[in-house]
Image (cartoon, rainbow, N blue to C red; front, side, top):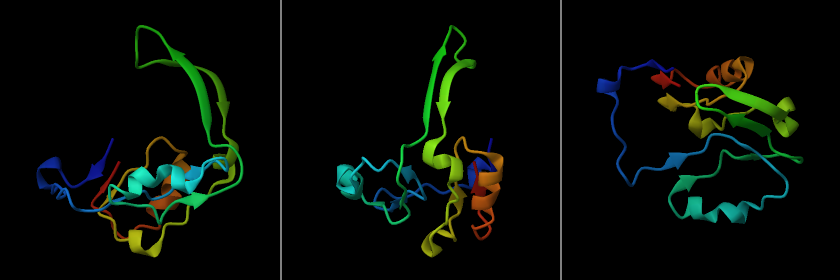
Length: 120
């Protein structure tokens, strides 16, 4: 669910506009040069925060109804204590996509953004 500007008022980005990765707890066995293909596609990587440890892991399965997942195992790992600090140059973002994270963490992120038009 998103709130903010209705879809008809959203502007489409030009292909040459940068895309930002706001934050991502990264497993210490990932070298940042392993994601150089993102930089080559004009993705701003300045918001990535690196932490030691494993990334979040989820193991589950789906049956016939893909709306219902059966969780077999969850390992929070570095995301358990993660508190994102939004870089200053991202705080004016119009659009914020929070994905599937803890509501308290979502609030922590939203409170750092200066009046986003749309939050998903």
